[in-house]
Image (cartoon, rainbow, N blue to C red):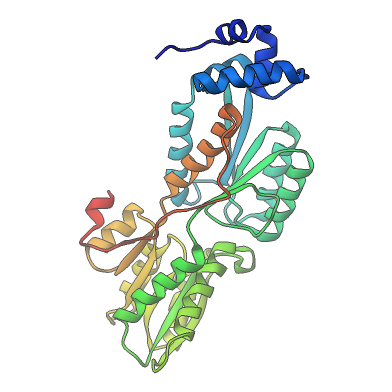
Length: 345
């Protein structure tokens, strides 16, 4: 099939190339007669514009900033950086400038400072991991007031100013963890929701997971489980857990709402002789080793690399090719045990 150029269409319609360009891109003034002529030709040849040629012709460099917790402080975020690198590699031939910014995963001050720095750069878009609720809402409002597009990943904030979210339904993943725990912990034993965090009040993702976990058990009839919440001091996790174990001898199941399951198991091995069941998140090397040894019963895989890769790709293709950004992209909740771990690796 013949590939029609703007020149070909202009000759057939008897108008200038500039008129055809204005009709195709819906910009500038065109007479009704010229519009009808060009539109009829476009329909006859089933014209499809070349988005790559359009983006290069536009000659604008789109700047996108990615904001995520420092992977040196929490290695859960290492795959997220890999996802950013993959997107950079795929779109390196286009006029897109992607910059990474890190904040301390337990520091609201660091989070605010990084977002203030980015606001001064005035990028076209920001892809943000909003760990801290109040601070994230303020950051997003500031970006939108400056005309900056904002997408989020990993943690979801209920805010109209964000155009997109990529991640899992964290409430539902909490329910999945509860269903798994219900199958492996007998009645009349305590189940502990274990948060490794300096400030649970700010941790949106932990709150959502806990709510889903508790709602599952609250909806059951005829079961006897006492659900306890334990916030572990990251500065002194050993002491927090040892004190808890010494005061509670009925705890048999631990649901860890972060990637720190390995930290919990290492402490439990030294201070508990029970066959304690552990369910946590994320395929970190230490977690994987304990899963293979059945020291961890299940891990929920959150696909962190895919989250940043898709979040960035949606923004890039929106700017380059005028593609619509999906408002929400929920990834599957992967349930991993010692038998299927190899398929995820």
